[in-house]
Amino acid sequence: MEVQALSPEVIQDTTSAPTPSDAVPADLIDNLISSSLNSSVLAFSDEWFAPASNLTNPKPPIRRPGVFVPTGAWYDGWETRRHNPEPYDWVILKLGVASGTVKGVEIDTAFFDGNHAEAVEVQGCFDVGEDADEKVVRKEYAGWREVLGRRACGASQRHAWKINDKSEITHVRLCMFPDGGIARFRLYGQVVPVFPTSTDQEVELSSALMGGMVLSASEEYFGSSKSNLLLPGRGVDMGGGWETRRSRGQGHVDWVIVRLGARGEVKRIVVDTAFYRGNYPQSMKIDAWDSEGVPNTEHPQWKEVLGVQKLGPDKEHEYADSSLSNVDGAAFTHLKMTIIPDGGVKRLRVFGTRV
Image (cartoon, rainbow, N blue to C red; front, side, top):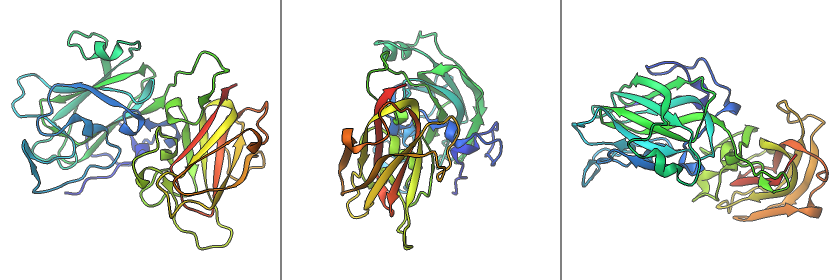
């Protein structure tokens, strides 16, 4: 069965299969519970047929017809047993970021047909502190509030609802009525980072965990995503980075523009080509910009902070001190990395102090 595609930019108010309208700007949203951001499943009512951890997998769900495991047919999602004596099954997740505001909810029932969830409800809470994770999973916890009221779901399709909620949350609870299966749960929103109290402390200004966002890129190819560049960690294979196609023209370059999580003074830059061994760029350079607007790639206000540097395979390349230029006493909001002529980069990390 074909599953209707829906990009994150196309979140809308609907209980049926969505159509492209009422778009949310792509630079405003991220999947706050993606496992790529180190989100975690804290508790669940049941996961007899398929584990709840599948819900946060950033990859599209897949189907393996005819494959069986000890509990039954294999499914790429979260599936509970039949005949739930309670009104609903539930799963509690901790956001991968410190906190965030929700802009949209997506429920994907891909390949669940006859065993799909009939309806869902989403609740959120804001709770911080050393014992927050233990508190929110208790049955008597009273901090939950509605993020998305009860909505009907259909078989093997993606459902999305736009949310107008400015309240911050740290945890989310997905309720599935009465039982069944869901392939993916995506919670789109804006990251609300928690920075150190002292502005003298160095932080990773570009990190997705700190509100960094990739605004645009020359292209995305081979199933790669430009947003992968700002994820934590180094990934597990070549699939988790940003890779462009082979160029054939003379003088070709590819580029990506990053909005930092906070305006800051750049101290260190790390360009990681992890797992890219025969397809890494020959070299790269980095420019910076200080502006509230969205910069144009060719605007003359871009300042070079790192000249052309040769890159190597499967390696973290770190640049600081004398390698950098135009950074002392300067504050920036955006960076542009230009790769020459093309290839793959796993991570771009920009460290500095907030201004």
